[in-house]
Length: 341
Ligand code: GLY
Image 1 (tube, protein in one colour):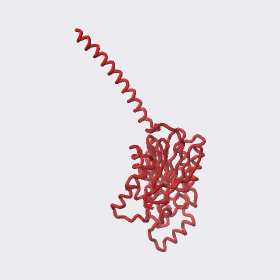
Image 2 (cartoon, rainbow, N blue to C red; image 1 turned 30 degrees about the vertical axis):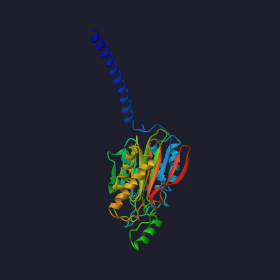
Image 3 (cartoon, rainbow, N blue to C red; image 1 turned 135 degrees about the horizontal axis):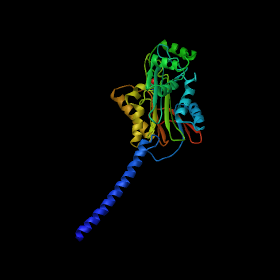
Image 4 (cartoon, rainbow, N blue to C red; image 1 turned 90 degrees about the vertical axis):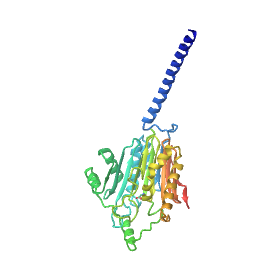
């Protein structure tokens, strides 16, 4: 009897502990679920830096514009769109938007995409005659059931949405193209004719991250060629809980490794932003070597930001730079570390 009472007491205690344990487990589970269902809930320790990053020197003016959106309490999605539009509209920037170098047949064809922390994405490829492809990409994201429109369909959509049709080939780009036609050989000048994309990543005061990228693509490309920039997962990828990445350089090599998605997945596994970018470059490089390709004409670079705002970059070759603006608006142009001299 006493054994039975002792057993019952122990059972009751065990039951209570089990219930307590289940209760604790349930609380933990629900906290974990809350975290993983919250698209802006970083998987890293919470912090709230506001950060803007963008590729190349022209990123300085893109960051300044993005920062003016952020400083009024604006969303990261509005900031990235506003930032890259500055570069799209600048005819002096010969690798993006208006004034971009044409394809080998003299047509300026543009690629762009945009993505927010929830996985909303829009993309436009092989678009002609519209100065702001990033805004067409955003309109596709917000006003259609699709993610990507291309070519004449994209142009038709843009015109219906009220975008203005215009000639994007400036006299300077046309003159350069005519000079190129004399030899018509494809040997791009590294970091110039294949330094081509403005990719931008922003974390706003609410911890939302968004990205955009936009380009006229490689100079003198084949008519109809589309690079990595409008491809979600190649030229840009954003996961609100993990981070974001964007790519620049030789688009074919970025597509081959699904570069920006790879960088985000590496950050999910615990790499810092720079480590993730470095590993993606190493993979692209290994693939080059396996294919016996000549690397002399090639550059690729990745820029990344973790969901907590930690940022970094890495490039195949020397020469890739990026603009970084941190809390308080302090901006620096930084040289990316690189694999090959
Ligand atoms: N990275 C831009 C392009 O290859 O078109």
